[in-house]
Image (cartoon, rainbow, N blue to C red; front, side, top):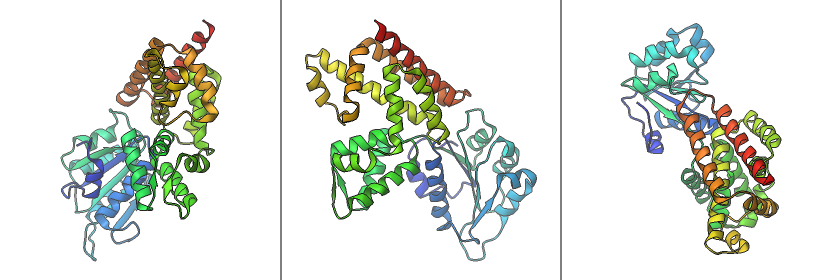
Length: 342
């Protein structure tokens, strides 16, 4: 089966009838977090050699029977055993499919993989088997990321202003693990203070490498195709998921569209900008204003449609997500460049 909702509840208390779970997707940090959380939920630990066993994908490829042997091994100290396989691909799909179709032993087998297409042999094996589940890990949407931020800060005894929360939500989210690192850095930065403001967030996180994403976002709106390609390539090579990049660009386009709409209703430029939450970062205010003059409401509406189509194509077809999304961003940059010549 495929886990499509209430993932956190499933992870906290996985169905004991399941013999195997596949954790996969473009958010590598979230894959690792859920991999470890499921291990702890069942075995209570990550490092007890009697309760937790690791099999390398290369080992499994050379010795397919190893999986069944590990799953059937007894735990003399009591409790259920967890067998972990990292970085699986379709090259080991046959060995894993044989196991999930006819599980042996009492262990829970956990398998991680990168993003898998809907036709992936590995993914299909887990989705179709009666005692297996596939758990996708996509970049956090706004609601999920906001929950992560609130949960992390609350655990540290910190509160956060609504504007600071909006700004953080707009900047984090490409990778769950990286988001948590940034939040941990913010917690340390706050020291004995208990309430986080926009100034605190700007000072602690505003000049990090995450700002490279803003370079890409504004290059799309400016019509700078060369920068779009260069920064997109750098971000994806560093591990930023293409879907999270698309989400950030879409958020920027929606903010342009929202501001344009308020201006159409009679607000002047300054009043329309002031109503945005989070506010436009001061370093980009001039460029944001220039893009408002360049992009008409119909163009922005079409841009939103194009980005939605790209996201659907990237998530539901075998086409590489990076190629689909890069092409969409280049198309938007070309539209912006043409609009600037009018």
